[in-house]
Length: 441
Image 1 (cartoon, rainbow, N blue to C red):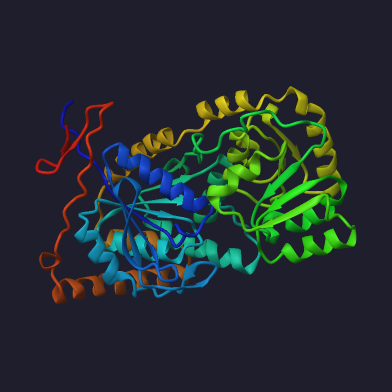
Image 2: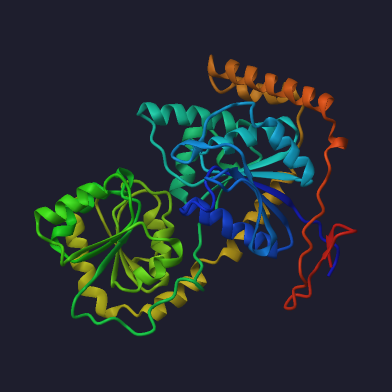
């Protein structure tokens, strides 16, 4: 095999393990597959309770849990420049060549991408959610996203609907935005060894019990059928009140928060998986359920219609009566569903190794983008608005000055570079990492 230069990637987000969710899983599985491809991957996130400092995960994945505590929905408090010293240190210590930020709602992601561009690094951003345009929160977030993505090298969205949403919100040229869907670990999510009896149909819901995930919609739908509900959140009280009101204790089982390692054991107890989200860019939960052989009933929102073939999912409007009709339709076609066949199809449709290879292409394109001086970069920020553009320019100028002050105070030569994690020999591909020549052999 000829010499091949690898990427050195810093993944940044407020959302990572031990917290669980779609973004956390995406970063972890993508990082593991990139490591197997021979790239160096380091993750930066904030501290979780007593988890702080540097940790190593499976495959030599290095995680920096920086000593910032979350203040709202696992997000750190915006500091603008407070993270500059530690971001700079990590970039130099790990000899990073590219920074990959995840999730528009992540404060740490926005700040790291801003600092990385100031220091001349190429940056890639992945958007995992959909946002509106009219409410105050969305208007604020969209302006922040416009600022962050003004200089992004390339961007990734998890669905075509998400791409359209991101392009409209940020003003990014569509040719800079790529669609790379999520995937599922089919080795973990497998059907039950024996097909379940159809004497009593069981519908499974595993979701955060919040408004965005359609918890209020569930309250209207559940009295009609039997459910197993896994998940926790502020809307759990409404579900329990509904169960008491209709005396459904024998038909509605509330499991509370379910650990990710236990999700499969809950899924294989049911026949149908119900997703009642009111907004969704992709929905990994649907993939996990389909991989376990469950037929899915879901609201027709966001990127959900793009996720599964028509014979694996029944879509409905986010309306209680329409959801009940969709569930009845799903029950009628259940006898035609072969869980093992569905699992095998999911293996072919969604694979994390394929996601990593497609992401690798985006990295290649990002590194080919031309470098620009400060004046050329500021012109992009001026286009963000009459007042906002000037404010963004001021923020970047201050960031640039602080970076140069840091260089004077602590030159890059004084920051010790850490040795690379030595990859074990890959018996199947005959690949190992040559630490001296910085190439695969």
